[in-house]
Length: 80
Figure 1 (cartoon, rainbow, N blue to C red):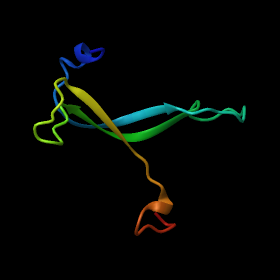
Figure 2 (tube, rainbow, N blue to C red):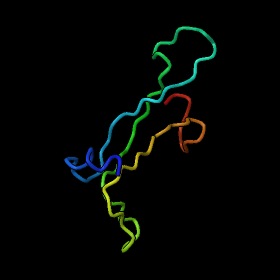
Figure 3 (cartoon, rainbow, N blue to C red):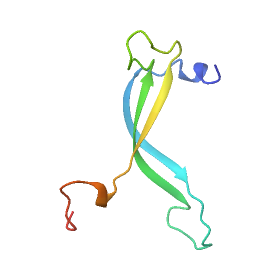
């Protein structure tokens, strides 16, 4: 597949990192982060063994962005 060679030397496992997503800035104002939204990210590199017997034949990457919406988080206060 397209990415198989790129993943050949990547060790399987769960990784923590950062992901930067480009944001559309329609206001025309200069922003501190140059239009990028940065998120904490958890990345799984492997064969996706979530369902036994249905593993992928090729190594894949699954990325999950961690977005903290203060209003959605239980037990938080305005002092956090």
